[in-house]
Amino acid sequence: MAADQDLITDVTDVEPVEIPGRWDFAFTYFAGNAASRFFAEIRENRRVMGTRCPKCRRLLVPARSFCDACFERTTEWVPVSNEGTLETFTIITAAFPGLPEPPVVLAYVTLDGADTALVNVVTGVDCSDIDAAAARLFEQPRVRLSFVAEPQGRMTDFSFVLAD
Amino acid sequence: MSNPVAIVGVGQTGYRRAHKDKSSSDLIWESAKLALDDAGMTIDDVDVVVQGVAPDALSGEICGEKTAIIGAGKPHLRVNTGGVTGSSAAFSGASYVASGRARAALVVSLERMGQATSSQQVFNTIFDPVYEKDFPLTTITMAALRASMLMRMYGYTEEHWAKIASRNYRNALKNPLAHIHKDYSPQDVMDSPLLAWPIHRYEACPMSEGACAIVIADERSAQGRTPAWIQGMASTSDSYAMGDRIHRPEATLVDLLTLRMSAERAYADAGVTDPVHEINVIELYSPFSSAEAMTYPALGLCKAEDGPAFVDRQGVDPELPVFNPSGGPQAANPVSATALVRIAEAALQVRGRAGDRQVPGVRRALATGQGGATQFSTVCVLGAQRPPARS
Image 1 (cartoon, rainbow over the protein chains, first blue to last red):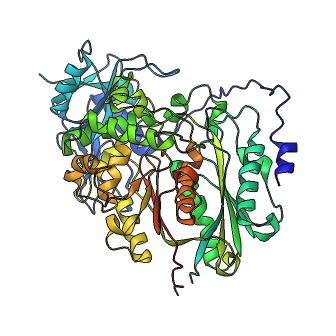
Image 2 (cartoon, rainbow over the protein chains, first blue to last red):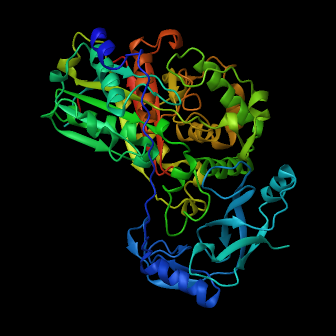
Image 3 (cartoon, rainbow over the protein chains, first blue to last red):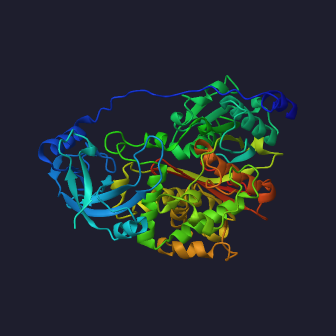
């Protein structure tokens, strides 16, 4: 009843105690066989590979060991183009603690030959005028992959750049 | 076997940036006590307790509900399905009761993110560490990627996003439990700082904490109480990878295939064939305006390409249901609890207990839930009329 709540949760004449806390754990993420090969192809051959589902025939990019829509193991590795079409995007303009400094352009791109889109950042976009940058990206421009000088076998080994 | 079940009690702590005067267990206790009081029950009247808490890192507590194992000696479940945690918990409790394994279920969802100094870094960790987490994917950017796609495909503008947000804020003025009580005009929303194009600050949900509880009862336990009958409820999941859904022929990333499937199933059970005219109130899981817009066609309220015109009709066309009389998640988004708040608010409307935000003459209300990278969707149809038993 109301009296109980007064006793337990509605005491107002004490200073609420605040105890500092911090989570700072280190982890190692295991990518698995499919992603490990996907990253090796990027690192060694500067190419993006997909895996094909034998049932729906979609070429899944980035590569997966199975197709979760069909519940089938993927069987075939196929390279896709280093060029593609920007599907959708956002331009991050506000700073958030622990996240990259803005502006950052984030986009999904379908590389030619793939049946799925891949997320990465778009580098080299002039963001001095956000609305103008958005208007350009809104037109679904062609993009191509740009690899870093020394790939580590990570998604950050490449980014998208506008093709023209 | 599925017996009729009803929501007979609702308890909410109210939602704000931080409840600094309450521990996690205090919040759970308070909402549970309020729900049981509303139902006219004690903890002894319920046979199962289901608690929902979403990502632990938002509170910095693993299993923040552990210090409030209420009603010890009963089955106890903890549910975490991201944004639909609250509705998943409700459906779990309802399944216990509908199957005859419990007379009544107590369902509590806690959000404790007031203890976090920043949420977006935590939200980045919900994404796949192999292919996605290296990029600034967050709840805000995830919504922004969809918003720009909706603008391109269906012609939404920033004015539409601002209009939706403004209406939700205005509704929240009548809800003392809401976190934000500001009468932001559409222009105010568009003038607020840009977070991630096209999303402005006042279009994005706040960080809110608080707890919500409901009591779900079987037909016998519902007698003599004020029930909101669960006429239909459905929960469906989708592929995780957002990029896999962009080219899907039956429904793209912004067409919310699984919300449509959930709605179709829930409508079939509830006997709803014309949702625009047969549902009076809709409480949407819509932390962003684009998230709200995606629900309209999925719920059968309009065609996808008519979405922008549908926004313009709201508040003008009296035939349309009332959207988010509580103010919705843009005015209070206690993440783990948000989908349960939708159900609780819909139940209050059906039971005629929604106070200043009560919509007159509500016979049927609908609540949605949307979780993860929109890979979980729930729909719950509540009504004043008891549904038949199903074998």
